[in-house]
Length: 315
Image (cartoon, rainbow, N blue to C red):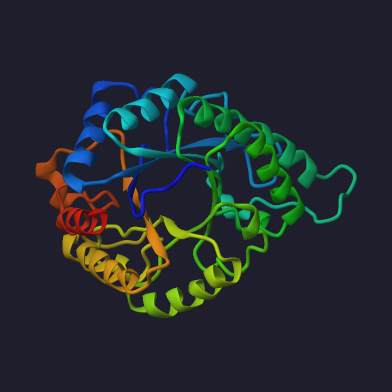
């Protein structure tokens, strides 16, 4: 297993990975600006493939709108050329808009109904395809799944998938559980690093870190936040995972979330870093930053906070 830098100062790049939006001058500029403004030493290259509904069993990763393998290779190599360590993170989403956490099937097979075995067979083909690319290009980390809450209980299938990944990929393997699920996953011993989505309300960080710390101690594994962030929108610091929350653009709201989150996490030496959410392949003009209410910190107050924190913790 490859060794990690002591601190993961990362940003998620490129999501959702729409075909044709990578491997072009805009995407190149985006990644260069991410490195210039944030002092990152890691990035997660994240993209999604679709299944039709939460109860479909075929993941159509070779079809549009998913980025092509050529685009994935370009993004990895571009990040490496900028001196970044890379985590490759393929994600499955539902074409009908249902959140992936609701992908679910009967626990006992029923004739004429979709089955877990069918879904995991397709999901395994999907994941192994990109694990092989991660190995080919020397990605330091590979994420086998993201926020798939209803699948988490399928311990046997997840252990088998991770075993299969290790047959084609030699780097660090992690799974990105959803917020509040860190103590629900029972197979953390199978991965190299525990990671989760830290979209916690600004006033709850201490209690959530207390809870997560027990998991880290139980499994004796390194931990980092594979996702964490907050929209620059009034009200979002109290519900940072709700990208549809109504509110006016508000840079200070986002900045305050980052101040508190970094402060609370800095008190826990077992938090080994962050892959913040998120940085688009095509950026808005920096002069329009104050009117952008999404997660990206480009040109906003949070940008400077992230930069200073990463510079401090990298050195």
